[in-house]
Length: 490
Image 1 (cartoon, one colour):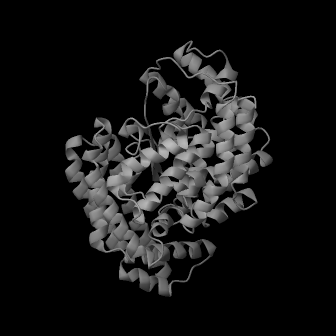
Image 2: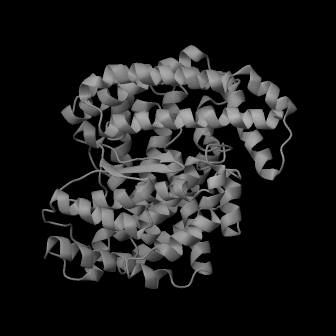
C-alpha cells in the first residue's frame, strides 16, 4: 500500500472511533441512568485518550510527508488530516483527557443546577472548564488571539475580529426593525392552550418526515437541550416538550432535521473520511436555520401545519392560517435563545459572543458571569432576568466546553439568507409544494448544491459554490425586513 492508502486506512478507524465517542454523548443526554455519570466520565476520558493518541501518532506526519493524492478529493482529505494533526499535536494528552472527563461530568452538574435554579452549584465546575479551555487556547494560538484558536475548531478561517465587524453591520438594521415591529398596531396573540405531549411528538415526526428525515438511519428522543448526533448511516435527533408551547417541540425538531439531513446527504464515498462530515458549524447551522425559518416558518408551510395542528389538537384558539402564520413568527423579547424569534435570535448570539470572548481572553471572570449576563440582557432586550435558567444557565454549550461555537449560529443565519436567495431563484415550485407539506424541491436543491459535498471545500467557498456569490449578511437582512414588515403591516 502507498503512504496515502496507509494514512486513509488509519484515518478510517479514527473516524469510526470518533463516532463511537459521539454515540456515548448521545446516550448520556437521552438514555443513560443518572447514577452512571461518574463512570461515563471515565469512559469518555479513556476513549478521548485513545483518539488523541491516534490523532497525534507520529506516523501521520510521515505519511503526510510521503503521500501523493490521487485527485482533488484526496488532496482535500490530506489538507484536513494535516490540519487536525497539527492542531492536536499542540494539545498535551493530559489536557485532552482532562477536558473530556470534566466536560462529561459538567454536563450533568449544569443540568441539575439549571433545574434547581442554583448557579452556585455549577460555577466552580464552569470555572474549571474555562481554566482548561484557556490552557487549550494558549496551546493552539501560538501567541495569537486565544479566542480565535477555539473559534477555528468550529468555523475554520473565521476570526473574532471579523465576526465582531459583521455583527456591528447587522445590529443597526436588526434593532431598527425590532423597534418598528414592537411598535406596530398589529400584534399577534400568544397561544393559550394545552397541547398534550404524545400528540406533539406524533406531529413532530410528521414534520420531520415532511423535511426528508430518513427514519431508517435515525431516531428521535427527548433531551434537555435539543441536538443532532452522528454521521454517515446513523444520524439521530432530539427534541423537547412544553405542553403550553408546541412550537418549542415542532421547530426544534425541524431545526435538528436540518442538521441531520446535511450529514445524511453527504456523498457516501466520503463516509469515514475527513470529508464525511459537515465542513463547519456555520455551514451546518445554515441547514438547520433554513429548514426551520425560511422554509418551516414560511406562510405556505405554516398553512399546512395549521391544518395538521387542528387535526391533532382540535380548536386551539387560532382563527385561520393567516393568524397562525403571524403567531408562529410572533416577535417578543423573550429570555430563551432556542425559543427566540428571527429578529431577536441574532441579538442573543451577539451577547453570548461578547461574553465568551471576554471569558476566554481573561477580561471576564466566571464569578462575574451571571451579573454580566443579566446586565447585558437588560441593555439589549429591555427585560430583567429573574431566574438563572432564563439567563446564563439556559444553554448547555459552556458546560461542555464549546467556546467559539455560539457565533456560528448567526453565521449560519447569514449563510441561510444567501442560500434562500439562490434557491428561490433556481427552484420555482417551492412554495406550492410547501403548502402541501412537501419540502422536497427545497431540500433536494440544498442536498445537491451543498449537502452532498460534505467537507470538500472550506466554509465560505462551500456557500459561494452553492449560491454563485460570496456570503454576505445583506440577503438575510432583506429577507427579515420583507417578512416582518408584511406580517406586522409596516
